[in-house]
Length: 350
Length: 272
Image (cartoon, rainbow over all chains, first blue to last red):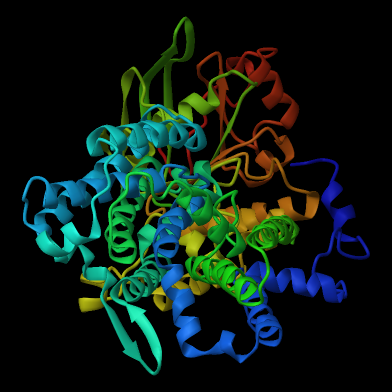
């Protein structure tokens, strides 16, 4: 037995050695904890303030159902890609190649249907296959060779864009040709009116995708494993999670979602251009970050990305309606990104 | 304990593990008997970790056999060991900070809802997992933790350790292994974990405790496996050997055969 019973001394200690509970929390600390628990609260707050602000600045025109639905249409493609980007960022990765995958698969869809006479449904499936393969390549390089996602996807971004230019011969596919030969390619561009709002099937698809991924992240083991992998990969492995499998599945799903975005973008733009989508990667990261998801992984929520994309959409639209120059719209978005990242850093210390 | 329990629950025979020119395990044996706390002590580099990794499947041995409840097993990775009922609490805790307590307890073995929701929609049964988590934690007297839905990062070091121990105790059906569970903890928190170890043992679960902290070892262990130069050097008991004798044997300053109690202590209820 231990001859010198040092613990008996500790037992006589007057109070707790270190206490975390009793301290009176200041307002800021309470706010910090609240945001820690509800990462989407901050972007939601910004969205509400922005809508109110633009209502005052730009007038009732801004709040009309038509204008609000226009914003939804404008964020359709970046919203869909944002879902893919959220999954990747939750694993503490990043995917710079999302835009390139989207363009490549839209070009494959378009050329297959128009130049090769493949039935539109199969052309679209081939486009999805391209998304799958591209995502698989990303995931394979990252898990098999332990390459950093940033560099890996920077590399594949260039490779996919080069393949895209080679395969498309830098030619666009005109809207009239799609209408004449494969109108199904534009299926997600189909517009309908509801309560004075004008929605497209693409917008509805985007909203359904958000709901679906919200369910997957919250209510399935796969979703919990994505968070655990991004949070602390070593702990996740020791808990028995095959983190490589999780990562690979995330990049593959991201690739498939990019193909969905490709189909939606054909509907939205009407034509297929090999030069489109170059900035979708940065725009999607913007939506994710403003939506309160941490770039360090393991923390955030999918609905935050929808709100983040809406914030960007509302700012662009509202500032335009208020007659502010485009450069100041960009300035405002930049400011928002920095505020969002600073908030995240602050929340992480809670 | 009845004299019928002669069979070790977990045993290793002639375990050898080499890393290049370094021999980490040199024909080592290991025996853990039902219902006991077996401490493993040894100097740095004596091969304690290699021994444990060989037993759990984290680093399978080059040669030698591992037996679980008398059956020869061949674990290729830690998952195999876990599936067979060996749970390990790691030094670095292995909990996911931003997930909550219930999520962490069930990480990697989530429960799905019964019927259509679980089978086709793969829906998790959060309610049931919370219920079991609450039950397991209160069994171990840990429900001072306010809410089961609290993220683990909001807990103190000792509470996190308690979550990791609770996870092992809840799911380890045969053996719980703890690697330096008190290394990162303060005096009071260590006390909590030591009590937990005794609780786990008293509920019938054999525990392997790897530790450098001699007072802790002498307090909770039934037997002490002394590892030296890659093999089992001696097995001693806290009531026959003093701490200084244990350290002397561990460091080679004393030949365990010179001690009146001998170099191999048999567990309670085992006929010599």
